[in-house]
Image (cartoon, rainbow, N blue to C red):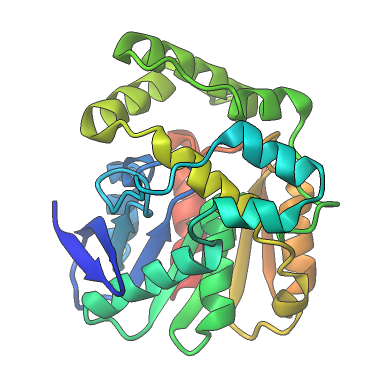
Length: 293
């Protein structure tokens, strides 16, 4: 798999689908998930619509740069955040979501791409928003999928979904794969499939099992703050996609995003949770193809 050097000190693993001469679409994945979570079939379907699709591992995930020299003690971090000691919490986290957004821009630069359509899911949607905010001249369109604005009043997870998110998986492969079924709590109620979740967990484990990066990504996400004021001024054409079954980031997160961004389009998808079930790929690919036309 190709690796791109992104200044100042990050290397990002990525792969591509389609013709490099077609309009580029950068796919940004969410919290703790490798590029594999953008399924090959989904990427190929978008490439078949005349797009040059790029997916990549965020820092501290998959085969990209790992910040092993800056471990984050999650219990201490959560205690600092809960007590309102933001300075202490910030000191524990080696990078921000803004840094992760610069990674994505740096990858485009390394690939010789000046401007691209940017699509982000979950935490990746937050990163994609920051790309558009910081570099509107380089973002042709923004798609924020199953994400939120950083405002605490919107997009809150249910207690059940939050419990699963913060509950670690076993370190052994068999236990890790079996525990993936817990993610059904935020999946599509109609199309959620434990076998699909186990398959992705197994492939991800075999490719690059690395739970240590989760704490640092979580810290960056928790401390990102609100993007509301910046989103109100955003001029990049924006599509917001959110599943009505989402219990990890409630649909209000997407609705609020679309409310803030001038001229944004909102697509609320029935039978979609915090996932992209194969049965809904035609809906999602059609929406992305139309938005990036």
